Every structure is written in structure tokens, then in C-alpha cells.
Image 1 (cartoon, protein in one colour):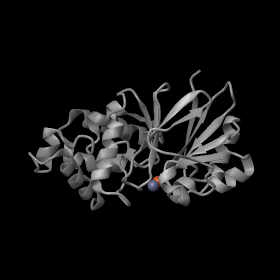
Image 2 (cartoon, helix red, strand yellow):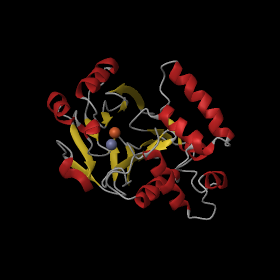
Image 3 (cartoon, rainbow, N blue to C red):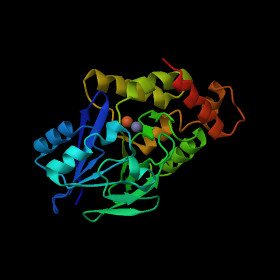
Length: 256
Ligand code: ZN
Ligand code: FE
């Protein structure tokens, strides 16, 4: 049976998301940005929290861990690489591990860059990916702990997932990402069209997340670092795509 999914905004611009398997009654929270917001989502859905899957250690993804563990008795699973910084962690996972969520395989993809131990969770049978702060709609995470090369490799792993994969990310940053993307890739008709959709969604108070791998490959400037139009805009016609990516990510850090 298909998993039920409930996404909700929380904190200033985070998304929380619950996945639920009806037959077993299991419910996982992908990250736990805020215990009160996750509890409210559980009340709204009537689901009982059985587990938390953590993408990375930042407070806006783990602050709810201990309170939710106390109130629900849930288990907490997260990346082995930064287990010592994830509150309440019970189980650790590494690249290539497969976690069983009620018969739905969850593949662990190590995506260092934003943090060194960051992981994404990919459910091939459900066509779902939870990518935390590695990739955003039209964006990618700020490179805090890893190197720009590591972030490029991590994004390439996500870009290699099937086009139709539905991608949930940790934040609603899309409109600001759009403004930046347009400074580089305004000659891309797919980006222009998506920009109109994004502005309409936000004006109506609706989320722009989830996205898909196909949409990101067509419009996300970081994934398009090897495209001739993007290379031209960056004045880097022959540099390796990884270097074009690094220049774009660095430009975004300084973009107001
Ligand atoms: Zn983060
Ligand atoms: Fe975050």
C-alpha cells in the first residue's frame, strides 16, 4: 500500500513531514524540527509516532527529538557519521544501508557538504526521497562542514535518482532561490515557467515542496552547472562542471 504523507510548515521556514503505513500503524517523522509542531501534526492526522529518521544534526532538524521520544516512546535513527551530535539517537545508518519502514525499503545515501554526516533517505518502491538540507527546490544547502566538491558529488547522487522521484526537502526557500536562479539562468524557458508557478503558489500561501528530480534537473542552477547556458552566464565555458557549481554556490552565499 502507498504510504500516506503529511507535510507541515514549522519554525520560520522549515518543513516537517510524517510518513504513515496504514496496515502496520507505523509513523515516521523525517527530522523533528519542533516537538510542538510535530505533535500538532500527529493530532491532526490521528497517527501515532513510532520513529524519527534524522537527516543531519542541525538544531532545526533535531530540536524535537528528546521531547517526542519522551511523549511517544519513538525510536530515533540517523547517520552514523554524526551520531554523537544527534539527541536521543538509538540506531545509526551509513551509506548503502537499507532501513525497513513497515516493508518499505529506505535506502541511505550519504550526502556530505551541508554537514559532514548528512544523509538522504530514498524509498525506491514509493518513488520518494527525503533530502534534508542537501537539495532544495531550485537550490542546495549552504556548505557549512564539507567542501564544495563534496556537495557537488552529493547533488550528483541525488540527480541520479529516477526523474519521477518526489523530493521532500527541509525548507521553503524556493522564492529566494528563484530570484537567484534568474540572475544566472533567465534564458531557460523551463525556469521561467516554473518561476510563474512558484510565485502563484506562494501568493496563495501554498508550499512549493515537494519537487521532483526531473524538475530540479531542468531548472535548479546548481544541477545545471554543466549546461552551456549556465556556463556562459558564469563566464566559465570550459571549466569542469564541479568548478562552475562551486562558483554558483559561492555567488549565492553573497547574494542579497
Ligand atoms: Zn541544516
Ligand atoms: Fe535546516
